[in-house]
Length: 523
Image (cartoon, rainbow, N blue to C red; front, side, top):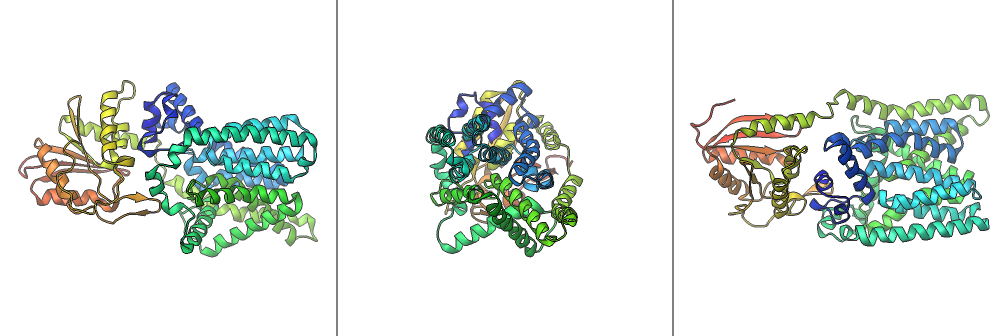
């Protein structure tokens, strides 16, 4: 969905609200658009910015930790954790801004501590101030980090210096102005979007109290798991509790060693996100909280450093050995998770190859039925981006928009489905494409609204498909809950006709159907 927005708009067009209810910072969109313009439309150019951010996350964590904890061993451990952090690794290969959020937060952490340590340094202030302003347009949650950083500076020794106070006021004013412009001009429509409010409803920190407690507990658990453990291996809850305790120990230790400002710097970003969530301005999910990864990693490393010091308080020579042992134990789960993931890794273009084969199969002239949620996928992968058919792209995206927000991600109708979708037909270049109607199985944050399609959905679609089959027709699915494709296939079979071809690739399903049981040859 986001790829279609970026490839189909100019830099100026990306300033306006995106299609399919997508949201991303304007600089993220602009850099991605330039990447596509230079390297063409493909997975590598679209993922270039998240990938570079993911690579940069490792050295940025080294510099931030080295500056804050002032220990090469701790900095090396933080960089090693960043290198195998499961959720950071995942989103570094995903065309969304979450990997950028984590790297931006790491850079801000490094720069603000540099300012606090050297309040008289103009270069330190210039770097922090400039990057804070840029971060506003590059990473949405950076506002929580910069606001906490400014509060930390105000509580630090840097605030006692007259030049430091002037620099703080200047940076705060410039940053606040840019943040206001970004919110009211670029993001206001997204935060007030009715669909997004509905989709993220379960991720807002709102009553009842049980939901609030469950949300906080879940986010803490998922953050720890996705930062240090991964999900390839199931670990006991006690492992997560131990990691939380180590992180809390680290924050307390930093507060004693560096001052109260460090506690504000570490707790401020998540507390501000929680406040924004109460106002329904920012959802609290594992991916939207990825910007907290640098703080979680540094706090845990500080906790390991503190525990190593407590264990060998009377034996300084043994301390490095104890620290290294704890570091290895901390790294083992994420390293194992990475190894398991890499073993099953496919080529980056494997999905494109699968879709190319599917498109080749469907290029013989028979109509194609495209499941409502899959219109963006189908459109992106069936377009020749060296000479795109812009009219067809527009017709398909318009048809997807008519099925409802987010390409047909609609709640249940509450009534029988009858005679829907007659106008959801796209004819272009000799190809006939039927766009499916919504099933009513709406996907929201952490759940699905219902476990089966609306009554009459399969019958309605079967009627459309049989009418369009000449005498055959292809059916394309990738994004369907509880195998609603099989529900439709069973309905079509029951009403006559048969399937003569089925192909299931990584997440994609293709069927060839003939309305006359005697027609067609099995493949």
